[in-house]
Image (cartoon, rainbow, N blue to C red):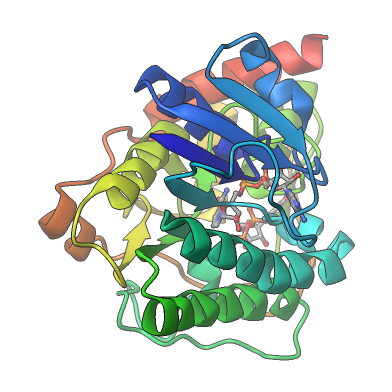
Length: 316
Ligand code: NAD
Ligand code: UDP
Protein backbone atom coordinates (compact mmCIF):
# COMPACT_ATOMS: atom_id res chain seq x y z
CA UNK A 1 0.00 0.00 0.00
CA UNK A 2 0.96 3.66 -0.36
CA UNK A 3 1.07 4.96 3.19
CA UNK A 4 1.43 8.49 4.55
CA UNK A 5 2.62 8.95 8.15
CA UNK A 6 2.44 12.33 9.82
CA UNK A 7 4.88 12.55 12.72
CA UNK A 8 6.91 9.74 11.14
CA UNK A 9 10.23 11.19 12.31
CA UNK A 10 9.13 10.92 15.94
CA UNK A 11 9.64 8.13 18.44
CA UNK A 12 6.70 5.85 17.58
CA UNK A 13 6.41 7.10 13.97
CA UNK A 14 9.98 6.13 13.08
CA UNK A 15 9.44 2.56 14.34
CA UNK A 16 6.21 2.46 12.36
CA UNK A 17 8.12 3.54 9.22
CA UNK A 18 10.56 0.65 9.79
CA UNK A 19 7.76 -1.88 10.23
CA UNK A 20 5.75 -0.72 7.21
CA UNK A 21 8.81 -0.79 4.94
CA UNK A 22 9.66 -4.28 6.19
CA UNK A 23 6.11 -5.33 5.28
CA UNK A 24 6.61 -4.05 1.70
CA UNK A 25 4.64 -0.79 1.84
CA UNK A 26 5.62 2.54 0.24
CA UNK A 27 6.02 5.15 2.98
CA UNK A 28 5.88 8.94 2.84
CA UNK A 29 6.84 10.43 6.19
CA UNK A 30 5.62 13.98 6.77
CA UNK A 31 7.15 15.80 9.72
CA UNK A 32 8.28 19.29 10.71
CA UNK A 33 10.72 17.88 13.30
CA UNK A 34 9.19 19.95 16.09
CA UNK A 35 9.67 17.20 18.69
CA UNK A 36 11.03 14.48 16.39
CA UNK A 37 14.31 14.27 14.54
CA UNK A 38 15.65 13.43 11.11
CA UNK A 39 18.12 11.20 12.95
CA UNK A 40 15.27 8.80 13.77
CA UNK A 41 14.81 8.01 10.08
CA UNK A 42 18.35 8.72 8.82
CA UNK A 43 18.88 4.98 8.29
CA UNK A 44 15.97 5.00 5.80
CA UNK A 45 17.05 7.92 3.62
CA UNK A 46 18.34 5.72 0.79
CA UNK A 47 15.46 3.24 0.94
CA UNK A 48 13.72 3.13 -2.45
CA UNK A 49 10.22 2.98 -0.91
CA UNK A 50 10.75 5.77 1.65
CA UNK A 51 10.43 9.56 1.39
CA UNK A 52 10.81 12.13 4.14
CA UNK A 53 8.95 15.40 3.53
CA UNK A 54 9.58 18.35 5.81
CA UNK A 55 6.14 19.89 6.29
CA UNK A 56 4.01 21.38 9.04
CA UNK A 57 0.61 19.67 8.83
CA UNK A 58 -1.06 22.77 10.23
CA UNK A 59 -0.75 23.86 6.59
CA UNK A 60 -2.72 21.96 3.91
CA UNK A 61 -0.70 19.19 2.32
CA UNK A 62 -1.13 17.98 -1.24
CA UNK A 63 2.47 17.14 -1.90
CA UNK A 64 4.55 14.11 -2.59
CA UNK A 65 2.81 10.81 -2.08
CA UNK A 66 -0.77 12.03 -1.87
CA UNK A 67 -1.97 11.28 -5.42
CA UNK A 68 -2.36 7.60 -4.74
CA UNK A 69 -2.29 7.54 -0.94
CA UNK A 70 -4.25 4.59 0.43
CA UNK A 71 -3.69 4.87 4.17
CA UNK A 72 -2.90 7.80 6.48
CA UNK A 73 -1.47 7.27 9.96
CA UNK A 74 -1.88 10.64 11.73
CA UNK A 75 0.68 10.75 14.55
CA UNK A 76 1.91 14.34 14.35
CA UNK A 77 1.69 15.98 17.77
CA UNK A 78 3.97 16.73 20.69
CA UNK A 79 3.34 13.88 23.14
CA UNK A 80 5.26 14.44 26.36
CA UNK A 81 3.90 16.79 29.05
CA UNK A 82 7.07 18.89 28.83
CA UNK A 83 6.75 18.93 25.03
CA UNK A 84 3.12 19.94 24.91
CA UNK A 85 3.55 22.57 27.61
CA UNK A 86 6.47 24.07 25.63
CA UNK A 87 4.47 23.89 22.40
CA UNK A 88 0.95 24.29 23.80
CA UNK A 89 -0.51 26.33 20.91
CA UNK A 90 1.24 24.16 18.30
CA UNK A 91 -0.23 21.10 20.04
CA UNK A 92 -3.75 22.48 19.79
CA UNK A 93 -3.25 23.49 16.16
CA UNK A 94 -1.79 20.22 14.96
CA UNK A 95 -4.49 18.16 16.63
CA UNK A 96 -7.33 20.40 15.40
CA UNK A 97 -6.45 22.00 12.06
CA UNK A 98 -3.76 19.43 11.28
CA UNK A 99 -6.21 16.58 11.87
CA UNK A 100 -8.84 18.22 9.67
CA UNK A 101 -6.33 18.64 6.84
CA UNK A 102 -5.50 14.95 7.03
CA UNK A 103 -9.16 13.92 7.24
CA UNK A 104 -9.91 16.03 4.15
CA UNK A 105 -7.05 14.35 2.33
CA UNK A 106 -8.37 10.93 3.35
CA UNK A 107 -11.87 11.88 2.12
CA UNK A 108 -10.56 13.20 -1.22
CA UNK A 109 -8.38 10.17 -1.90
CA UNK A 110 -10.62 7.49 -0.39
CA UNK A 111 -7.77 6.56 1.96
CA UNK A 112 -8.03 4.76 5.26
CA UNK A 113 -7.30 6.95 8.27
CA UNK A 114 -5.94 6.15 11.72
CA UNK A 115 -5.79 8.76 14.48
CA UNK A 116 -3.32 8.21 17.30
CA UNK A 117 -5.23 9.52 20.26
CA UNK A 118 -4.15 9.02 23.84
CA UNK A 119 -5.05 7.63 27.25
CA UNK A 120 -4.98 11.30 28.28
CA UNK A 121 -8.52 11.63 26.88
CA UNK A 122 -9.52 9.76 30.06
CA UNK A 123 -7.88 12.55 32.10
CA UNK A 124 -7.47 11.67 35.78
CA UNK A 125 -9.72 8.62 35.43
CA UNK A 126 -12.46 7.69 37.84
CA UNK A 127 -12.91 4.31 36.15
CA UNK A 128 -10.11 1.79 36.54
CA UNK A 129 -8.87 0.15 34.38
CA UNK A 130 -9.97 2.39 31.53
CA UNK A 131 -12.31 0.92 28.91
CA UNK A 132 -13.03 2.55 25.57
CA UNK A 133 -16.60 3.31 26.78
CA UNK A 134 -15.34 5.61 29.55
CA UNK A 135 -15.82 9.32 28.71
CA UNK A 136 -13.04 10.59 30.93
CA UNK A 137 -12.42 13.15 33.65
CA UNK A 138 -10.57 16.05 32.03
CA UNK A 139 -9.95 19.55 33.36
CA UNK A 140 -10.77 21.71 30.31
CA UNK A 141 -8.64 24.65 31.50
CA UNK A 142 -5.78 22.80 33.19
CA UNK A 143 -2.14 22.61 32.14
CA UNK A 144 -2.74 19.33 30.33
CA UNK A 145 -5.84 20.51 28.46
CA UNK A 146 -3.88 21.83 25.45
CA UNK A 147 -3.16 18.15 24.77
CA UNK A 148 -6.10 16.25 26.32
CA UNK A 149 -8.78 18.50 24.87
CA UNK A 150 -7.02 18.81 21.52
CA UNK A 151 -6.94 15.03 21.22
CA UNK A 152 -10.61 14.88 22.24
CA UNK A 153 -11.33 17.40 19.46
CA UNK A 154 -9.31 15.26 17.03
CA UNK A 155 -11.45 12.25 17.95
CA UNK A 156 -14.65 14.29 17.49
CA UNK A 157 -13.44 15.54 14.09
CA UNK A 158 -12.56 12.01 13.01
CA UNK A 159 -16.08 10.86 13.84
CA UNK A 160 -17.67 13.74 11.92
CA UNK A 161 -15.63 12.83 8.83
CA UNK A 162 -16.84 9.26 9.26
CA UNK A 163 -20.49 10.36 9.54
CA UNK A 164 -20.47 13.09 6.90
CA UNK A 165 -17.85 11.88 4.42
CA UNK A 166 -17.78 8.13 5.07
CA UNK A 167 -14.03 8.14 5.72
CA UNK A 168 -12.80 4.68 6.67
CA UNK A 169 -11.30 5.96 9.91
CA UNK A 170 -10.44 4.43 13.26
CA UNK A 171 -8.97 5.74 16.51
CA UNK A 172 -6.40 4.23 18.85
CA UNK A 173 -5.85 5.51 22.37
CA UNK A 174 -2.21 4.90 23.15
CA UNK A 175 -1.05 4.39 26.74
CA UNK A 176 2.51 5.18 27.90
CA UNK A 177 4.94 3.70 25.41
CA UNK A 178 8.73 3.43 25.68
CA UNK A 179 11.71 2.22 23.71
CA UNK A 180 14.71 3.40 21.67
CA UNK A 181 14.40 6.82 19.94
CA UNK A 182 12.27 8.38 22.66
CA UNK A 183 14.31 11.59 22.85
CA UNK A 184 16.62 11.90 25.85
CA UNK A 185 15.37 15.35 26.82
CA UNK A 186 11.64 15.03 26.19
CA UNK A 187 10.93 14.93 29.91
CA UNK A 188 8.88 11.74 30.10
CA UNK A 189 9.47 9.39 32.98
CA UNK A 190 11.22 6.66 30.98
CA UNK A 191 13.94 8.82 29.34
CA UNK A 192 14.32 10.87 32.53
CA UNK A 193 14.84 7.93 34.88
CA UNK A 194 17.10 5.96 32.53
CA UNK A 195 19.36 8.90 31.66
CA UNK A 196 19.51 9.97 35.32
CA UNK A 197 20.41 6.42 36.37
CA UNK A 198 23.09 6.09 33.70
CA UNK A 199 24.62 9.47 34.59
CA UNK A 200 24.54 8.68 38.33
CA UNK A 201 22.25 11.66 38.94
CA UNK A 202 19.32 11.63 41.39
CA UNK A 203 16.12 10.01 40.09
CA UNK A 204 13.47 12.76 40.11
CA UNK A 205 10.20 11.43 41.51
CA UNK A 206 7.37 13.92 41.13
CA UNK A 207 4.88 13.73 43.97
CA UNK A 208 5.01 10.73 46.31
CA UNK A 209 5.66 8.22 43.53
CA UNK A 210 2.40 6.40 44.30
CA UNK A 211 0.79 7.36 40.98
CA UNK A 212 0.66 4.48 38.49
CA UNK A 213 1.36 4.03 34.80
CA UNK A 214 1.36 1.05 32.42
CA UNK A 215 4.28 0.84 30.00
CA UNK A 216 4.11 -0.70 26.53
CA UNK A 217 7.20 -1.52 24.49
CA UNK A 218 7.23 0.24 21.13
CA UNK A 219 7.31 -2.94 18.98
CA UNK A 220 4.06 -4.12 20.58
CA UNK A 221 2.51 -0.75 19.96
CA UNK A 222 3.56 -0.66 16.31
CA UNK A 223 2.13 -4.14 15.81
CA UNK A 224 -1.17 -2.90 17.25
CA UNK A 225 -1.22 0.19 15.01
CA UNK A 226 -0.85 -1.96 11.91
CA UNK A 227 -3.57 -4.40 12.97
CA UNK A 228 -5.99 -1.55 13.55
CA UNK A 229 -5.15 0.19 10.27
CA UNK A 230 -5.17 -2.86 8.02
CA UNK A 231 -7.99 -4.80 9.68
CA UNK A 232 -11.19 -4.73 7.62
CA UNK A 233 -14.57 -3.60 8.93
CA UNK A 234 -13.08 -1.31 11.57
CA UNK A 235 -14.56 2.02 10.44
CA UNK A 236 -15.58 4.00 13.52
CA UNK A 237 -13.88 1.67 15.99
CA UNK A 238 -11.85 2.92 18.97
CA UNK A 239 -9.21 0.72 20.56
CA UNK A 240 -7.02 1.10 23.63
CA UNK A 241 -3.41 0.09 22.91
CA UNK A 242 -1.21 -0.39 25.94
CA UNK A 243 0.29 -2.87 28.34
CA UNK A 244 -1.99 -3.64 31.30
CA UNK A 245 0.96 -4.23 33.65
CA UNK A 246 0.58 -1.43 36.21
CA UNK A 247 3.47 0.04 38.23
CA UNK A 248 3.77 2.88 40.70
CA UNK A 249 6.35 5.46 39.64
CA UNK A 250 8.38 4.48 42.72
CA UNK A 251 8.35 0.82 41.64
CA UNK A 252 9.40 1.90 38.18
CA UNK A 253 12.29 3.98 39.58
CA UNK A 254 13.56 0.98 41.55
CA UNK A 255 13.31 -1.26 38.49
CA UNK A 256 15.35 1.23 36.44
CA UNK A 257 18.02 1.31 39.16
CA UNK A 258 18.15 -2.49 39.14
CA UNK A 259 18.27 -2.88 35.37
CA UNK A 260 20.94 -0.20 34.92
CA UNK A 261 22.94 -1.25 38.00
CA UNK A 262 22.91 2.41 39.04
CA UNK A 263 23.45 3.72 42.58
CA UNK A 264 21.57 6.97 41.96
CA UNK A 265 19.54 8.29 44.89
CA UNK A 266 15.80 8.97 44.78
CA UNK A 267 14.86 12.65 44.94
CA UNK A 268 11.25 13.64 45.64
CA UNK A 269 10.02 16.80 43.96
CA UNK A 270 6.63 18.52 43.63
CA UNK A 271 4.48 17.41 40.71
CA UNK A 272 5.69 19.21 37.59
CA UNK A 273 2.15 19.83 36.26
CA UNK A 274 -1.24 19.78 37.96
CA UNK A 275 -3.88 17.16 37.13
CA UNK A 276 -1.28 14.37 37.01
CA UNK A 277 -3.43 11.22 36.65
CA UNK A 278 -3.29 9.16 39.86
CA UNK A 279 -3.86 5.78 38.19
CA UNK A 280 -3.70 4.62 34.60
CA UNK A 281 -4.10 1.16 33.15
CA UNK A 282 -5.67 0.10 29.85
CA UNK A 283 -8.48 -2.40 29.61
CA UNK A 284 -7.49 -4.20 26.38
CA UNK A 285 -10.36 -6.71 26.30
CA UNK A 286 -11.75 -5.21 23.09
CA UNK A 287 -8.59 -5.16 20.99
CA UNK A 288 -7.69 -8.66 22.19
CA UNK A 289 -11.09 -10.06 21.24
CA UNK A 290 -11.42 -8.24 17.90
CA UNK A 291 -7.85 -8.25 16.61
CA UNK A 292 -6.02 -10.84 18.72
CA UNK A 293 -3.61 -8.13 19.88
CA UNK A 294 -1.95 -8.13 23.27
CA UNK A 295 1.50 -6.98 24.36
CA UNK A 296 4.25 -9.59 24.22
CA UNK A 297 7.14 -7.69 25.78
CA UNK A 298 7.16 -7.45 29.60
CA UNK A 299 8.58 -4.24 31.07
CA UNK A 300 11.82 -5.74 32.34
CA UNK A 301 12.48 -7.31 28.93
CA UNK A 302 11.76 -4.12 26.99
CA UNK A 303 13.97 -2.06 29.26
CA UNK A 304 17.10 -3.95 28.16
CA UNK A 305 17.26 -2.66 24.53
CA UNK A 306 15.92 0.69 25.71
CA UNK A 307 18.69 1.15 28.28
CA UNK A 308 21.25 -0.02 25.70
CA UNK A 309 20.05 2.68 23.28
CA UNK A 310 20.24 5.46 25.91
CA UNK A 311 23.69 4.23 26.96
CA UNK A 312 24.84 4.51 23.35
CA UNK A 313 23.33 7.97 22.96
CA UNK A 314 25.01 9.23 26.12
CA UNK A 315 28.31 7.77 24.97
CA UNK A 316 28.27 9.87 21.79
P1 NAD B 1 7.09 12.34 19.22
O1 NAD B 1 7.11 13.75 19.73
O2 NAD B 1 8.36 11.56 19.29
O3 NAD B 1 6.56 12.30 17.72
C1 NAD B 1 5.62 13.21 17.23
C2 NAD B 1 6.10 13.69 15.87
O4 NAD B 1 5.15 14.63 15.35
C3 NAD B 1 7.46 14.42 15.95
O5 NAD B 1 8.35 13.87 15.01
C4 NAD B 1 7.11 15.86 15.63
O6 NAD B 1 8.17 16.56 15.02
C5 NAD B 1 5.91 15.68 14.73
N1 NAD B 1 5.06 16.87 14.65
C6 NAD B 1 4.57 17.61 15.67
N2 NAD B 1 3.85 18.63 15.20
C7 NAD B 1 3.88 18.54 13.85
C8 NAD B 1 3.33 19.31 12.80
N3 NAD B 1 2.58 20.41 13.04
N4 NAD B 1 3.55 18.93 11.52
C9 NAD B 1 4.29 17.83 11.26
N5 NAD B 1 4.85 17.06 12.21
C10 NAD B 1 4.65 17.42 13.49
O7 NAD B 1 5.93 11.59 20.02
P2 NAD B 1 5.51 10.06 20.03
O8 NAD B 1 5.67 9.58 21.41
O9 NAD B 1 6.15 9.32 18.92
O10 NAD B 1 3.94 10.19 19.75
C11 NAD B 1 3.38 9.94 18.48
C12 NAD B 1 1.86 10.04 18.58
O11 NAD B 1 1.38 9.08 19.52
C13 NAD B 1 1.36 11.40 19.06
O12 NAD B 1 0.20 11.74 18.35
C14 NAD B 1 1.03 11.17 20.52
O13 NAD B 1 0.02 12.04 20.98
C15 NAD B 1 0.58 9.72 20.51
N6 NAD B 1 0.78 9.09 21.84
C16 NAD B 1 2.03 8.71 22.24
C17 NAD B 1 2.19 8.14 23.50
C18 NAD B 1 3.54 7.68 24.00
O14 NAD B 1 3.62 7.14 25.12
N7 NAD B 1 4.61 7.82 23.25
C19 NAD B 1 1.08 7.98 24.33
C20 NAD B 1 -0.16 8.40 23.90
C21 NAD B 1 -0.30 8.94 22.62
N1 UDP C 1 7.39 11.58 36.46
C1 UDP C 1 8.30 11.56 37.51
N2 UDP C 1 9.57 11.98 37.28
C2 UDP C 1 10.00 12.39 36.05
C3 UDP C 1 9.09 12.39 34.98
C4 UDP C 1 7.79 12.00 35.23
O1 UDP C 1 7.95 11.18 38.64
O2 UDP C 1 11.19 12.75 35.94
C5 UDP C 1 6.01 11.11 36.70
C6 UDP C 1 4.93 12.09 36.27
O3 UDP C 1 4.62 12.99 37.30
C7 UDP C 1 3.78 11.13 35.96
C8 UDP C 1 4.47 9.87 35.46
O4 UDP C 1 5.83 9.95 35.93
O5 UDP C 1 3.06 10.84 37.14
C9 UDP C 1 4.47 9.72 33.94
O6 UDP C 1 4.93 10.93 33.40
P1 UDP C 1 5.22 11.15 31.85
O7 UDP C 1 5.72 12.56 31.72
O8 UDP C 1 6.09 10.07 31.35
O9 UDP C 1 3.83 10.98 31.12
P2 UDP C 1 2.28 11.11 31.50
O10 UDP C 1 1.83 9.72 31.71
O11 UDP C 1 2.12 11.95 32.72
O12 UDP C 1 1.71 11.73 30.29
